[in-house]
Amino acid sequence: MSAPQRYTHTAIALHWLIALIIFCSFPLGLYMVELPLSPLKLKLYSWHKWAGVTIFALALLRIFWRIGHAPPAPVAMPIWQRSVAAALHVLLYALIFAVPVSGWLMSSASGFQVVWFGVLPLPDLLGKNKELAEFLKQIHVLLNYTLAALVIIHVAAALKHHWHDRDEVLTSMLPFLKSPRKAP
Image 1 (cartoon, rainbow, N blue to C red):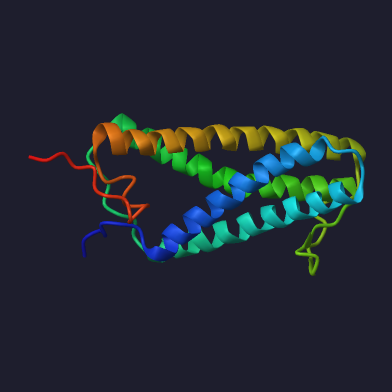
Image 2: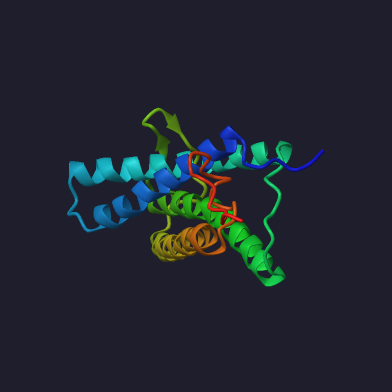
């Protein structure tokens, strides 16, 4: 059986839903930390945590979906580009899991339980520990900025493939986009 031309509709939906939630939760995180303690700040922290848990759950679903569904056939590119692309994807997946887990650990060490959508309490992963919470906060911030940088590289590479290389990399994830193939 040959590889498909595009990702499945489910893979595409999960990719863009995760991307959208990350795109919203990153600036929310930057904004909320600067606020003085208030009901608004607590509400925004809750929303940020809900987003993180949702990203984690959707990423798990995406991994399980990917196990049973082959990605599109790779486009022709130099081996070094294929290696860099593979490494970037592994790092993106790792960070999509590590960022929410680091936030959950930080919340646990801070003594604030994560309650998904205000309904499902998640277990604390650590006991309350102020010094550890502060360290985990730094880790969470570092991981977030690393994820943001890798997302920018990922987007730039996809655009380069579409506009410069004129291959099907971007259209395999955006089916409504016209093929960039050069006319013969």
